[in-house]
Length: 514
Image 1 (cartoon, rainbow, N blue to C red):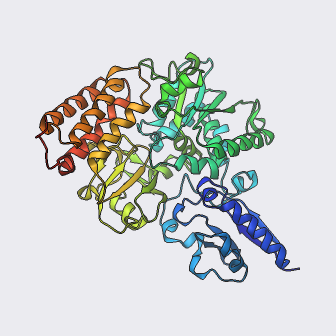
Image 2 (tube, rainbow, N blue to C red; image 1 turned 180 degrees about the horizontal axis):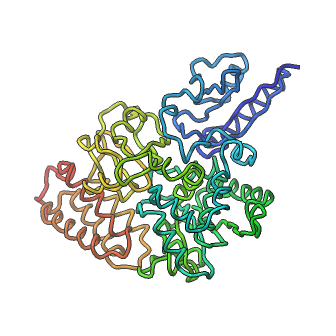
Image 3 (cartoon, one colour; image 1 turned 60 degrees about the vertical axis):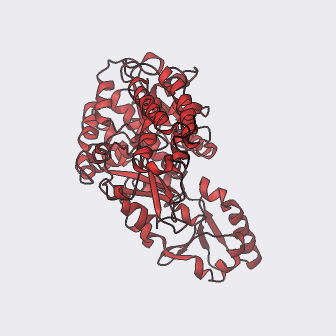
């Protein structure tokens, strides 16, 4: 009998879509033919999406990675071949080695559902400390860390928690907004599929901090694997005493339930999400009152994004000063940047705030996959600004982006090469808003439709100057009159495209047709 061969194959959506399960079956079949004992561990994703499926072989020197594996490559793996696919030691891959992994420190490293793996790699250390602290001490720690919401609005997490803590002693809730719907974003999904206990731990700590005993994960309906993994993780955590009426014998209670969204982009907005959680149609609520005072079922509620909550455990484990040491200005800690679109090396990069957009696109992303010149970059989802070559040296922090009329949002970065038609992209912003609007306010509901019609006329060269002026007026109405960011931010991509690429809005017969 040969020595045991240990392999890691991701159980993660990107890898599965590219044949990871078929590779596992081929590995087992090949091992049986050869009489080779194998152990296959289904880990999460390292975020190296451009190398998936990424198979790792455990050696005396560490885990050796083989990228873009196929079923046909499996025999070569047993023969010591596959040299062309070998990336060397996983930990030494430059894309990974130079990151600042705090929130994603275990993603790819561990079996996502193994409580033993989780705890051996720092899991529940933050919660154990929190159990020995007062609610105010927990809130103060998070406040001092400088953690801000990773869902897009960048509101200080500690201030939100402190508001809920001070809202009396009645029923309170923790709601995790896992309705990750922005284009080019997948960090929440990778975290939930690769390190679900991290999110669960963060939610428990939030509950202890504000006096909440119930939590809900509002999960995007397009994430079935997340639901399966989170569901099993919750069962395991309850069985081990980390959830329930008496957390690890502390006398403190907290539990979590999963609720599935219904495919609405606007339910990424916190009040629409709360309506959906209550069983209503997801529509934006007028504020005030704020959810921190009058939230789920009318009770004080913490609403945080997946990554905001998943960052709390390391802050509690290592202290506010440790986290404060990362980042610049008012943007403290790290953020998960997601590289997508026309990019050679798409994936997740966790870095401290302050890295430039150019470094992310060129050094991590490897430039455009087509090899042609970059034309535009959209940061912050479908409602984010389009930035050009001259903006690539912007530091990635909230204030620097705000200064140029852009948003960092959830950290999604979508790259376009020189073939992109920015007039079409501007029209897409209006089309997207028209489809996804909840319909509650007129500027968003009607303005998006009128905007798409005007953009179509401009593309056809009809009354160019006149229709361009109407678009700008319409954008002003939407920005200042919409109830929420859905309508209020739709002008951002439109106006940025008009500003940087005016030539894309001009046709040969521009201004001629009536």
